[in-house]
Image 1 (tube, helix red, strand yellow):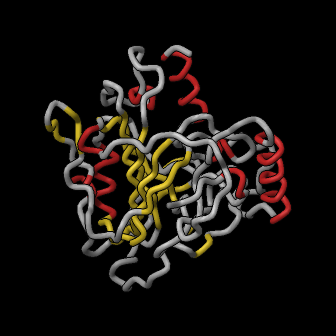
Image 2: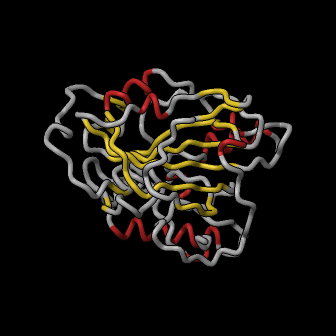
Image 3: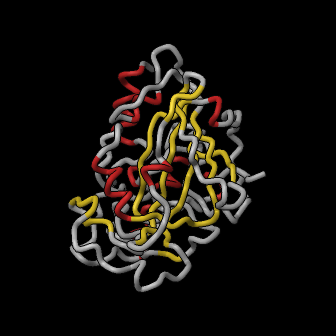
Length: 286
């Protein structure tokens, strides 16, 4: 499998792929529980007996899983190359301080996922008066939860507007690691996302040295790529996940500034994959 094929695969079905389900909600309405159940059933049928590895996202507070496909844990990020940064509206994972279900959404990954469980002040949720990260699915507002994925690779990766930068013709099976940070957007105070996502070349490797270290002990587990394109099929890629359980507050204006100027071509929040619950599609968290 050459790099060009993998690039097309990632672009079509990658960490933040678009939904492919033929079922959609009427505008302004969420799909029914039956639709989500049907998507889960299709995922189970499409993966049964096929040898897929453990999938993501998951409830990080539930350690059980029966998937027996195993792979080596990726190195620490200091030994890898940052190759992509993107974020999803609402958390894809569940657990820690983000267990409030956002609802079933449109069946394509928007309007679903998990929200910050805490409370915010009136100043923190005051409207900004402009559209930030606007797309056909809406825009970001104070009080919104996002899950940020800092993707790393053992390949000789570069920075650019494609997840294909995580791959290389010279290495057909690079190890991948995602450092996940869940944040709630505020209009008063909050951390500066441009500083957290600041990229430096350290030891000839692109790094994000300001990843937060005060959000609890990350839950590390074996999983896959995510995104709603995998609601009804398995992801074939293996990823070491490191998910922080606490939520940080991010100033929404700094997220706007990053959207305007980042090397990845990111200009809006991506949709989320349905939480994976099937034990045969989950690894055991050690």
